[in-house]
Length: 452
Ligand code: ADP
Ligand code: ASP
Ligand code: MG
Image (cartoon, rainbow, N blue to C red; front, side):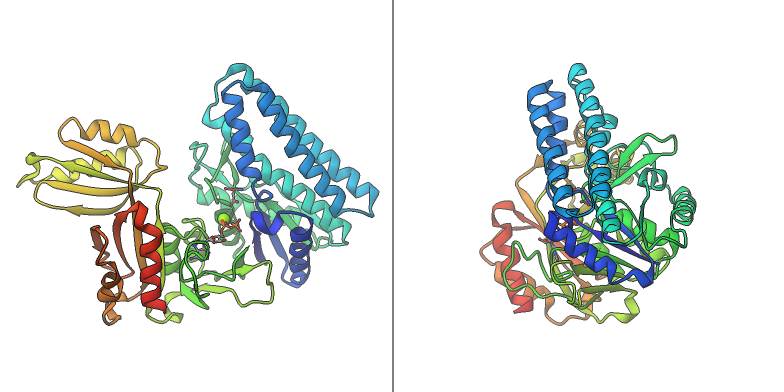
């Protein structure tokens, strides 16, 4: 079996979905489990709908809900032009999902209170809409396909907007659901990325970009031959092609390099995608649905990968938290006290640097509970949060073997300020902090100096 995940741009409209179905059709021999995202921009629209509901803006919500319904009904009509019965089924599914959502949004509007649980219900609808339509379109094309419900498979804790997957439950559920759905008379099965549920059946989601994670959790559960992540670029590149000119596509990188890149800002993969695949040593291919014959990037075990720099990644959505305390000087256990506060509040720290009386850390600006962390730290230290910085990471295998890398990285930056340099002891990344306004220039300069 193989898992094939198609992101938002790969299912954006009739032309993209037709291409996507063609790609799946070419791999039926390998028994695909297809995982789809919401149509491009639909999850953003659902976030806006949830905002309107919280603001009790009935009319605003109704207007956006109308757009949502229309876009999907029009798409169904375009995709399934010559099978009236299947088209009617697709439209009925869209209408049922949209009716339920409308009912739910009205209830939230009436209350004017949006819990994380309610938000998870609303934002998960994009994947149900896309998977229902695509399943119908595949059947209309003669590919016998059955729709599976991710919420019966991907079980998480009750962190509704960024659920933590419960691996044992997931393996059990995915195996059962796939065995039930993938009968001999089926050519393919399809399910939703991103959405999940607690063991009690309460809806959750895996966090933005979470469909990649769904694909690798399913791949791990069925011991897939490969996990394919189909997106809108020719594989993993040496930097974000939207921000840097002349990026190169990478033929192959290691699981560790990919995880590091995703964690340090390369949006092409959700940061947790690699972990489940590594457990079963399943190769991941990142491929371009707009250029299906391209090689893409293979993400493999480290022994197949050569040493050297693979990418310059960056993260602009960070906060630097500076913690000053004279009490820190010569007091054993101070660091433990500080990090215990981060850990208890579930805020994960990216970079750390310390001096005699200061600890500086970077955290993802989207982390929950940052205010609580700052409040607790402030009871015994002076805390300053800096939101004007960004983080750059040069990532690759055995960077200690790369001659002159520090010079190549920092020489072009003589006119810029650099803060908090850190080189992990595993030599897989060199990271540092810069002023956010200089970020794009800096990444381009380093990229040019390293990759030409
Ligand atoms: P999808 O909707 O298919 O999940 P995403 O938008 O989440 O697609 O991810 C693909 C995008 O990731 C690309 O269009 C590209 O702009 C961005 N990206 C960031 N860093 C990289 C990188 N190192 N290599 C490739 N793409 C990257
Ligand atoms: N649709 C979700 C999002 O936009 C998940 C995904 O695309 O991976 O975040
Ligand atoms: Mg994505």
